[in-house]
Length: 420
Image 1 (cartoon, rainbow, N blue to C red):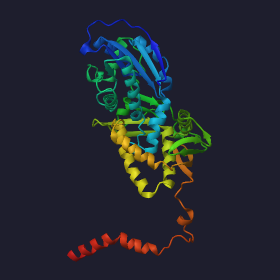
Image 2 (image 1 turned 30 degrees about the horizontal axis):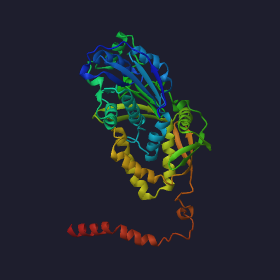
Image 3 (image 1 turned 180 degrees about the vertical axis):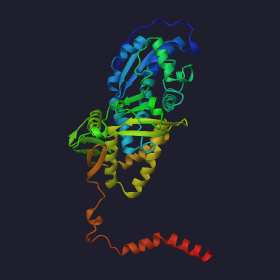
Image 4 (image 1 turned 60 degrees about the vertical axis):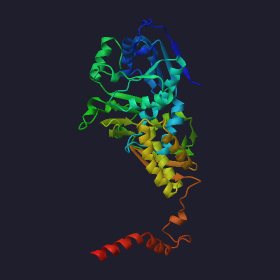
């Protein structure tokens, strides 16, 4: 069942002439710069009914006033769908279990949200019997791929409208001017041109001064974290418990999925944890700079990896580390609905069968320091690992192991010496 808030307002009826046979369009709406002008642009250029659909994945204050704004800009209906819990349980949990990091830095906050948003919007397209679906992703970015691959997987026969590939707006400046010419309220200005995406898992920042990779950025840009210099001088100790790879409690207190992420964002954020500055390789072949705040993600990944270190056997752990990189690429490249992602999930979920236990971390001025790891399924055996005397391991056995393990190297060296 969709948990949605439906707001119906009748707009002026479009004329009988519709571009490309499009009579009704559902627009993926966020209230940001691009989607704010898209509602107006689609209505003007396609001469059709426009429905705005916003999926709540934890944007917070950004949703305030969205209803009125969308109707004022031309939407005949506005859907606001609360998908925060589903975002955590069906998407974020998958990333945590996989330890998925794109290019070793990016926690995939936008990549994880887009397929969920597209799925919910596709449901509205079906409900409204719309002719087309529209998104505000630019022709340079990754989101156009993520949205459209999802739409092709769910509603393959519905027309996709991508204004950035059609209109003559070529820059943020053009978009701001378009909005001003039609009295559309926007969250950015020519002097503050950051492109930002916020949800429970992160906030991303692109554009503006960030496009100069030789330059830093202003501290005032950040919303979820303080700088390490302003973090408390006293360490914060935190224990996170997992069941089958899924985080369930903080310091012994159980939380519901959304509340756990929210609480960790606060705890880690005030300790200056979760900032990432990355030059990432977009799917379309462009290098771009992104600055991210991912406080809860940073802590949960660190804790989960520490727990896996004592539970997974060596070969499984090493192979999973290889697949983690591939899994991150799949998410980044918009292939959430692919058979490969589903197949990898089956393997990853099997590895998490015994990933149950607790990890204690020390948070201090941007640092995450492991303190302890405990699990009833731990493969770590102190009396075997000890440097003191033990009755399990026979040191003499190592000689035969080394001889067999090193035999190919010894043979190669002997042959090369003979040839020389």
